[in-house]
Image (cartoon, rainbow, N blue to C red; front, side, top):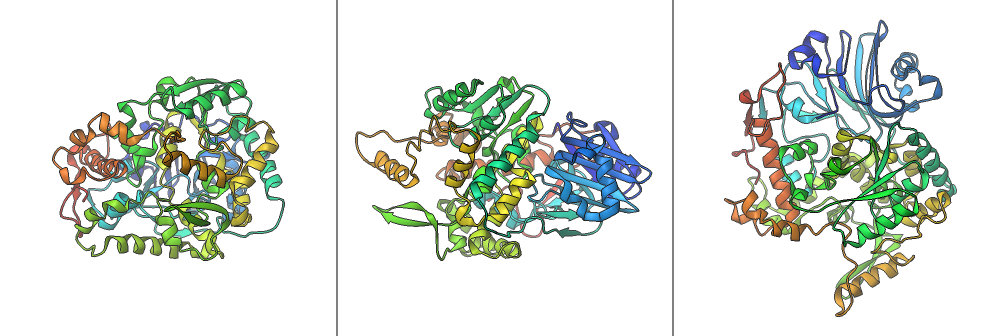
Length: 576
């Protein structure tokens, strides 16, 4: 990838056995930790920073905002604070980051509170090796053994849960956690502690400050803009945004409304066209999944060819952190359908709630799961995996309505969207702001709603909803749902349509069954998303085995020497 953090819990010579220092913009080294960082934004205020000296080393990778007194040399400031107060120094960090630090012979790598960047690691070479690019970490392992349960999770749930990867030899730093030379641990920054306050007004104030922090990034500013509620909040708070980009066909309501919103705020608008490249599933796209998610979320592929911006903002994860995507709500049934109400489900079945495609579960493909060794009941397999993961989340909340939110934030299946964008531009992740995360954790689930969010955004700009989303023309969400149902089912009424391109039509138009799976007719009846997910896994494995190699470096394990071993549970290198 263009941007990368890579390191070893050892000295410079150990690093050089794995990677070439010339591949990085900066190398920071001590006897206990050596870290290479590659990032064109290194040294820009609010972005990556690095320091090493007699007192140790510190590398901040990603986006991190610090107190004013730290701005001259933020990495050195963090190192000094860490020497004074230990992990309490982390509470002065704000943003989306990984922190690698070494002091007094000890070393550690910390995630931010929501693990918005993955840190992959392995002990296979005898020294713990870690990095943000899973492909590069995997290449340090002589033989990779497939993890059967991980592969089944990825194929059927859209994401590998917990801290695992596709391979037994490679894991991830824990959620809200820390990686040491020979162990890992979890912290307690992401824990629900609800209290009573003016939720909308406080959210508005925190949004203002979070947007102000990110408005000063240098260069021409752009925004991935949909016609919904989320991304327009950035237009209301960052007037310097000059260009907006929307995925869709020229005639799509999503594109038409997004263009009106852009004009409202004085920004130019460009459309990201929909053609066969929307399902470009080559290694250059699949690599952004890091082998733990699905590439379909890189829906903005091609944006770099039309974007006239250096900095690109987005509204990713607002629905999960500032509204209530993972909060179980009451539903009432009618005509074989259900309408979601604003009140909480009094006694939710959390597994059932998460199974309703909140994580991209594809129940219509259970027949394939049933053919896998060791899986007697496909539905039970999915339920067991979700229940196991929920058990790992329970100590971060007291109310059952917050439990699916912990699992959802911990395992967001759409990370590939953000990973791709951040690799191509200076990217800013608004929802990782510490103040907004505190609001999320302190606000009871019944108040983490779209209504509260819209109340807050209107305080930024009363005219922010001048143009309503095309699929939500009314202010009342229940009425919108009822109207949507009538439009879909009554003759003569035009349906609202989907804000996303019609994946099934695109897939059929380009005959991708015969392109991607010419020798696997048994998979042709599955959903488009499932088939693309399976192809992601195949491409990822091919990339590591050398069929689609990313350019190797002068040192390390070259593609020709790679071996992927089926391991204990697998008899094939191909997914089920």
